[in-house]
Each structure stands twice: as structure tokens, then as C-alpha cells.
Image (cartoon, rainbow, N blue to C red; front, side, top):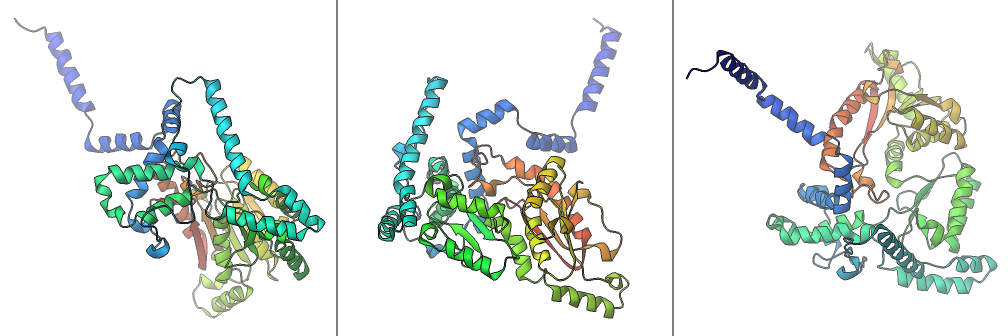
Length: 466
């Protein structure tokens, strides 16, 4: 029986069509990359968060990295043979394990969460000094408050509230017990647990005294912060006496409950422009550049002198000693404001270009900088709203920037201590998808920096890819 010619032609056409649509190796790679970087659906995100998949992926990903990513290099720091750090105590597994919610109504789940929150607050209140104690000190009962402070220190030593009930640590223990390939981690088990334990502790409160204060203002602030009322909660860092950090588990969320007087103190001096509440990691790039002399007038004068003596046509264009700073991803503006404070102290002129691609964030940044009270801040800081990876390159060498700050967009897993939603929603593809834009921003920064200038590159991520 002969085949229908039309059917044969159709079958041939369809087979040819199928042959043309067969994916090549390149198309397969593109589809795989699209599948890897595509944004998960709302249902996938919800399942991922409630199932605890973010914790498992986070632990497996970082345990698979080279030990140098996690290990600090000081293996003698802990003496308890792979257990938790000596100054950390957690509840038993029976109390930290999540109670299954299957079969419970939503109202019952909300009541259970409320009971957990109330119990946690009661435990925190037993570990901290009471507000009445602070008021008694103000009335002059120094001996009473000293006794309470000593008791608080004894109760608080070795006790820290862990985020997510220490779920990162429990996932790590399960991973090391069940994964045969984790043998290389056994010798450094204490370091791995210290790493994930640090990520499970709330981010300590930090703040700094603003630059440009006179000696009397600085001395007064140091005396108030060094008083008995505040010294049991905050103290200066060991590398800068004007940068303060909290200890014994005091963070932003627990501040109103632990010491309301300190919160009122910070609010008052933040409004009058003498104190800046800023995270320690955010302070470091500009702080290091200042210590290295990039905000120094002598460096700019020397650079001007070298440009005069040099025969290079490009360097001969450097005819002024104006310090130009570019913050390519400026929001929320803490680094731009920190750089503006340093420039305001110099006798020479200086400009800070604060750029952000988001117009609403840039407007919020502008309002925050205007409220800061820094001297001549409105003349020092200028605002730009363009894509950082396509920032206009100055045509003249004399108009390029001596300092370029690149705090690029990232997955933000290094901020897990202050943002509790990071790890439950974490995927490795988040950092991978941002890698290309990070590279483009860095390349554009290198094109905008002047001769003898510096580019500071930073992210809020611990991912080696970023």
C-alpha cells in the first residue's frame, strides 16, 4: 500500500522542522543558564522558605568552598574539640527543633509563634539589666547599680541569642554527620561551626562620632559613653577610639528593651549631627582610604607637583588639587556622607558624586545627607541618577576621580545577621546572576579613576564568586 504523497510530504516537512529545532550545544548551554538564573515563581519561593531549603543550600554551598573562605587561620582559637565556641550556649535540640505545623490551623500557628516570641523576650529580660537600674544610677545609687551590673555580666557571659533558633548550626551538624565527603572538614570542625555560629548571632550595634567635631564635643561624648550607665553596653573599638560597638548581644532590635536611655542618647545626637549610626563593615572602606592618606591635602599637593614636573601630556592636565570622589552605588549614602565629612575638614576644595540607578532611593539619600548637619554638605555632595555600569567617563584626565567607591549590588548573604530573610530565601543563583553587572561596574570604575587614584570595591556578600 502506497503512502499518501501529501502525508509523506508533511512527514518529511515535519521531520525537517524537527531537525532544525533540535537544540545545538550552544542553545543547550543558553537554556541551562536561563534555567539557572531565572527568578523562581512565588510558589517556589514560598516552598523554599517554609521547607528550610535556604539553610541547607547555604550550608552545603559554603562547606563546598575552599577552607580559606571560612577558616580564619587561627585554629587554636577554640579548645573544645569541634564543639560550639566556648562563649556560646544554646538550648537543647529538643527545644530548638521546630515543632511540626502539619494539621494545625493558621490561628493555632500564630498563637504558637506568639508564645515562642513571648518566651524569648522573657529570657532576654532575665539576662539584661533592668531599666529601673539605669534610673537608680541617675539618682545616685551607684552601689546598687554596680551590684546589678556585676550580676548581669555573670549571667550574660557565654549566653547569646541565636537567630532562627540556631538552625544553621543544626543543619551543619547534620551535613557533617551524613555526608561522607565532609571528612576534610572534620579537622576544622570548630572553625566551620564558629563561622556559622557567628552568622547566627544578631549584628552588634555600631556607631561613630562624626568628623569635624571640636575637642570639647568629642571629650563630652566620650565621658557620657564611658559612664557606668552606658559602659556596660558599648565601648570603643580597638582600632579607633571614635568608633563604638555594642557587646554581650546588644543589637538594634533589642536596644529599646535593653537600655532605652542609650537609644534616646543615640537619637538625640544623630539629629544634632554629632553621631552617625553606621555598620562597621560600611565604615571600613572610607576609613581605610583615610588612613592610607587618600583624603590628605599633602597627597594632593604632591600629586599636583608631580604632574607639573612630569612630561606626560595626560598628567600635565592635573592643574588643581581638588579631591573628587565618586560613589557609583551610593544608596543609602553612608559612605558618601563619610567621605563628605573628611572633605569638609580639608582646606582644599572637594566634591563627592553620589550616583544611584534608583531615583526614589537617590531622593531618600539626598534628604538623609541634607539632615546630617555636616558643614557645607550641600556644596560638597552632588547627585547623579544613571546606571553605574554606564556611568559617563570624563573626557579630560583632570576631571577624573581620585577616589571611586564601588559598593556593588550583590546577594547580600553577608548581611544575614541583620536581615533574617536572607538565608531562608537564599539561592546560589542569586550571586551568579549578579556577577556580570558587578564586573561591568568595576570596569567602568577603573575607566573613571584618575592616574594615581584608587578604586575601593566592596560587596555585602561572602560568596567568592562575588
